[in-house]
Image 1 (cartoon, rainbow, N blue to C red):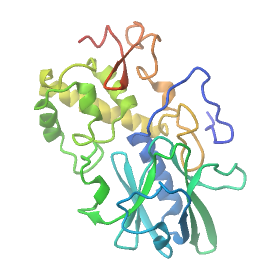
Image 2: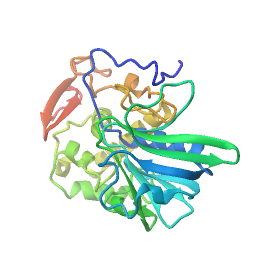
Image 3: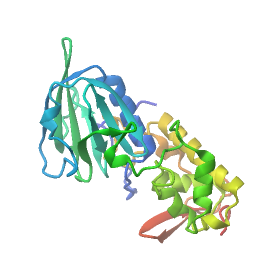
Image 4: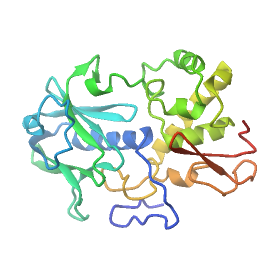
Amino acid sequence: MQPKTLATFIPRPSSTLCHMPELPEVETVRRGLHHLITGYRITEARDSHPRLLKAESIAPLHQLTGARITGTNRRGKFMWITLNRPYVLVAHLGMSGQFLIHQKERPKATHVRAQFQLKKSLRNLELVFNDQRTFGWLSVEELIDNIPSSAQHIAPDPFDPNFDRAATIKNYQRRNIKIKTALLNQEIMSGVGNIYADETLWRSKVHPETLTSELRPKKLATIIDNATAVMAEAIKQGGTSFDDLYINVNGESGFFEQSLAAYGQEDEPCPRCGTPIKRITFGARSSHFCPRCQKR
C-alpha cells in the first residue's frame, strides 16, 4: 500500500472524528525529524503567529540562529529538538500542529506559524511548523534532569527507560477514579489519549467507567501492557489519521485507523464478538466500547 500524501489525502466522508496527536503520532514526527534534520545548523528561525511561542519560553525563536541540531527527544506527547546549546526547542502539537519539510514537488503548507532555514554542508532545508487550529506551541527551554521545564509534571511513558511499571500500577490502584479518566491522566502514565485509551480497554475487556480501585494489580498490569502494545503497533503504522490535520514530516498520513477495534467504531460489529460498538460520553469525552466484552 502506497502512503497517502498531503496532496492526495482525502478524509473519510463519514468521519467526524478529530483527535489530538497522542504518543504514536508524536513519536512518528520525532523519528522523522531525527532522521532528517540532525546535524543541520539553523541559519534562520522566525515565528509568524502571536500565540505560537509559549509564554514561559526563555528566549525568542530567532535566538536559535546559529545553533546546530544534535538530535530529538520525547516524553509522552511532548517532544523537543536538542541543540549544541544549553537549551532545547520544545514542541506540543496541540490539535493540528505539524512539522513539515517543504519539498518542491508538494504543495507548501498554508498555516505556517514558524519557519526554520537549515543548512548542512551544501544542503539546505526549510522546516516549518504548520498549525491550522493554533493550539500547538513552541518554546525555548532549559533541561532539568534531561526533561524540559514545561514537561516536568509529565510522568514517564511506557517506552521511557525510567518508566516504573510496578509504581504505576500502585498509583492507579490507590485512586478511586474511572479507568478511562486514569489512562488520560498524564501525571500517572503519559502518552495515552482518547484513541489509545479506548483501544487499550477494548483489548483488556474492561469497561471505561470501571473504578481503578476495583481493579486488581494483575488487571492493571494487563491494561498497561495493552496500552504499550497498541501504541507500539500504531507507531509501526505511522499513527492514526482521520483527516489531514495529522501527517508526518513528509506529508504522509498514518494507517492505524484501519486497525481500530473500538475508537470511532460506533454501531460497527465488535471484532471479537460481533456486538455493535457503543459510544458513551462522560467528562466531556466520548468512549467507545463493546457492551458485551467490556461489561461494567
